Image (cartoon, rainbow, N blue to C red; front, side, top):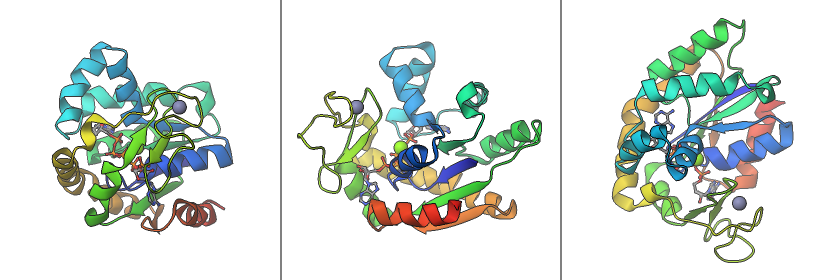
Length: 213
Ligand code: AP5
Ligand code: MG
Ligand code: ZN
């Protein structure tokens, strides 16, 4: 089962991808998480990606594509995967379709988590993330048991650099210009599904579960 999560920044792609991953036993592959790990480890890729991410811009396709293709070739992807934050541009989607086509494969489900821009800024300002295991929390909607500490691994939670209100607005603009056209792209491929992402995390997950069954 190969799944692409679509949706604006902060729509809940990562939250839902993690729940799908646990339920179906397939890996969640988040390009944002991979870039952030590279920034933490101060790799060459991390240094290049950081300047774009801090401005709310997309990392160039040439830095993104090989990374994903390499990741999808790993053993744990044999039964499928959930792509979270990739593809994000039409050229990325076309490259993915081509790479899969070479293996006689394709994306089975593209799922758009729909949340209007008005709700996004509030979600982002309350988000806290675990820099070690990638778990995501929200100070009101999904707080950790102990304030500031990851339930899963005990690490200190952080606020993401790009979650400042000005940067969030830029990310929304970039989303509408470059990523939203993917909805039409996957509609044409016949695998496009939408869920109302404004409801509780559990309700959104139930809707996704119905689609995947
Ligand atoms: P990325 O990390 O992918 O960020 P994003 O798309 O902006 O999305 P987010 O991770 O911010 O949000 P999400 O939809 O995962 O929401 P979450 O579940 O956390 O990318 C970051 C940057 O990396 C990009 O700007 C770009 O520079 C670069 N990049 C990454 N991939 C790239 C690519 N392919 N090409 C080029 N550049 C790339 O939820 C948000 C908050 O809301 C959380 O606090 C959560 O707890 C809460 N929440 C979730 N669901 C609900 C709900 N139903 N009700 C209430 N609260 C909820
Ligand atoms: Mg995310
Ligand atoms: Zn953690």
